[in-house]
Length: 183
Image (cartoon, rainbow, N blue to C red; front, side, top):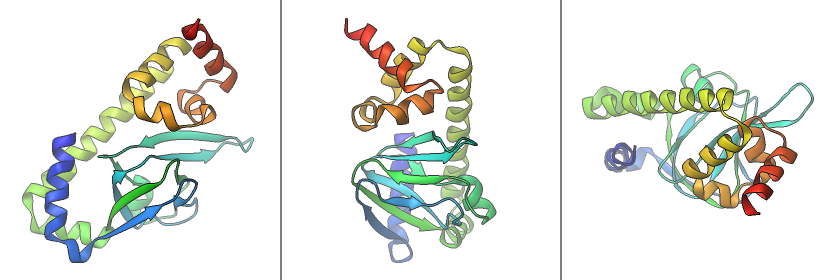
């Protein structure tokens, strides 16, 4: 995945005048629910989370984004329809932004970047499918261990409630699992 992002960054530099950079402070939003996600963001530094509210109003974290990741509400970005999720910085962040029209232009002009886009989407789908399987079939302790192994830096900066909702366990269960690992 890192090689793909490096290639994407190189290609984006060729179109630097058509892309932009932004910085977010911890707690700032890259996207609000109801907004159309007009840009993908390559995360240069910092960490973000995607989340939505369930029927009770609880926040459910659906994804984390770290340096080297491409971040977007994919359904909103590709359909150009309002998003049903929020994307929020959980630390200060620096993002390289590419809007939908520019990305489509780059896809048309560069076979290499077109293939890269497909590979990034394949990787994202694979990771989402794997995470779904882990969430459904692992015990709380196994989910916690999987999270630490795959999201080490996010584990250090994310609130326990974000991690717990991402793993589909309660914050109390997460804290209990953490305590058993410490003792």
